[in-house]
Image 1 (spheres, helix red, strand yellow):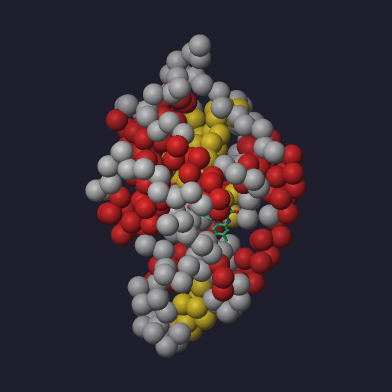
Image 2: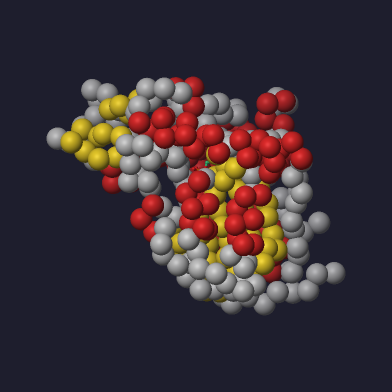
Length: 299
Ligand SMILES: Cc1cc2nc3c(=O)[nH]c(=O)nc-3n(C[C@H](O)[C@H](O)[C@H](O)COP(=O)(O)O)c2cc1C
């Protein structure tokens, strides 16, 4: 039986491109706050790479999965953290596909970096949100993912505070894929370099303001893209006029756009008894995730 962990303060450090991870962090913030635990939030971007994580007893790092590993900006942020001694840490990855191969090794590199910094890892897990990359599961499945997220988050908080240790072993071949995910970093830079504003651009400048990598500059109001993109898709899906077009690797952008706020509204009217509607092999990781117990009580 695990011992109860008495924690008074947590830091929730996260990167989010299209809002899925941010929604999860906001849910964790509410849960910890309700328990009387002080919550510090550190939103990771190129602007705050040198900022220290606010001191607390537990650091939770949240990141989307990009090409079978965590966002490169999150890895860079961890590398800049000051050395610590045995501060507790947990890593929560957020994917569109679930804890399937080759995703199972996605947290390995960040865990190693945290350990090098002196953190004591106690917990890791995968949460799933609707995919923003290339293909999406059917609508009902996406709504269910959003619907169960608060229950999954409550369960994780309960487990962490109960003193449970949850450290997983990735499948061996997946370590190779996670290592190869490094190549995606170059692909991401190329992807960003070739994004163009179409005629629909109203020169509002929102993309430049919101880019977490400061990769977009405006020249006479027209957005121009540099070589620091991490392929988070925030600019393309966030453009209010749908005016940004990828020049290469076009398959990565959902033709219908990514409408998390709209899906979240629709998910509110879903009821718990809804059957998992899909039997698609492609979304097996998502189906498995939805079928795993989603009550706040650990098994
Ligand atoms: C460039 C890119 C690569 C991705 N690679 C993976 C992947 O390897 N496995 C996966 O399950 N999901 C992958 N995804 C999907 C995201 O992890 C998922 O949609 C996540 O919820 C996005 O989080 P965010 O909304 O906080 O940005 C990828 C998304 C992008 C943009």
